[in-house]
Length: 159
Image (cartoon, rainbow, N blue to C red; front, side):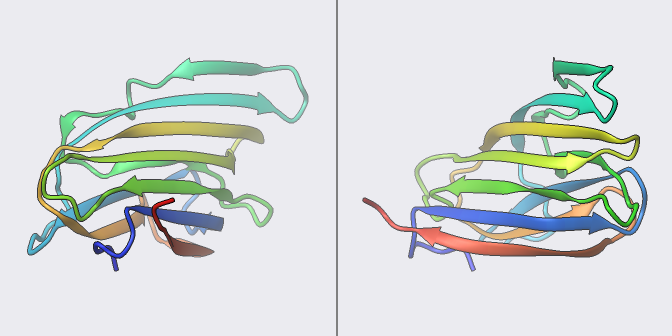
């Protein structure tokens, strides 16, 4: 439940394992009274990767996964492998979701095992471009279901 109890909400993703190989974990939100999980998002996505052999690594900006006033589900971690030893972990912070004055900023950092034996680190940030309060967030895979894992929600109070 996202409400005015806390100004910051933190989601933790623990051992998220997709049913389908190379799936991406994503999220979208609803304004209070809304439906369809289609709020307007502006975001940016960076990734760092390194393969198991140590022969390949990179840092890159991912224009494919960011949004410029889009309404799609925002990808957080991409191409998570579904081998028994592969999963994704990370966090998503949502700031002031109950504000009716400002847009709703978010920051996500996550690490995952890529389907081709790479370690990936993703940095995603942006905002839900609405001044309506947000009270629903949905997480899903780009293909198939979340086979296993835990998503925890914490409220962080003002200091």
